[in-house]
Image (cartoon, rainbow, N blue to C red; front, side, top):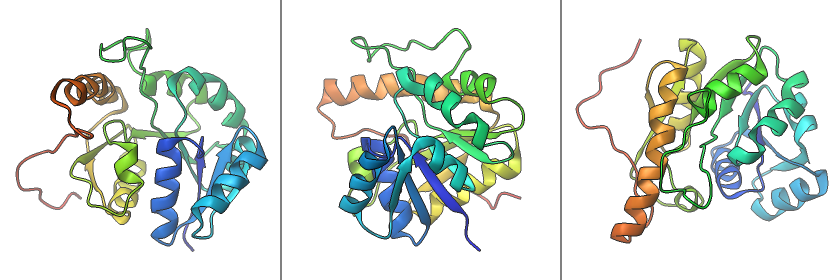
Length: 216
């Protein structure tokens, strides 16, 4: 049986785009939001069998959880779902952008948003991070997304599951090592925002060159 997936913060740009891609690929997906009504409205708008719940309820009902809230809401959102995610894979997509200077790298004292998430959720959660460097508006369209998705995590099996899920929705997931390595992708987001503005690029991304073998 395929796993039920909750996209927490699923009414935002990244969350709704990921939920739409996952549901369109045949996955059983719940959109989570601060209110059940907001989540249900977005689910109805996107279609493909999506349903909506409040964040905590969505996390409790799911087997795998993807957190797509802004960095400023990361801590409170993770505390909200923490009682419901022990033993589950949680994918944190948080990028520590600090307005108004979002084109400057400003990593948190913990070293990265992912390490901060690990401290909040604790060791019982199979934490993975990813989807930092992909343009949400491109994910939300039926187009080829010309960038790779770097996936980080200390547990190889959990990381591999998220890589496979990424591939299943028409992207290319790339194993990028331990959770602490997430700092590199989080920092790169500010660089990409600068590049987008400076060169007037419609969603710059990262592509890893070279021929990939089959990972074991």
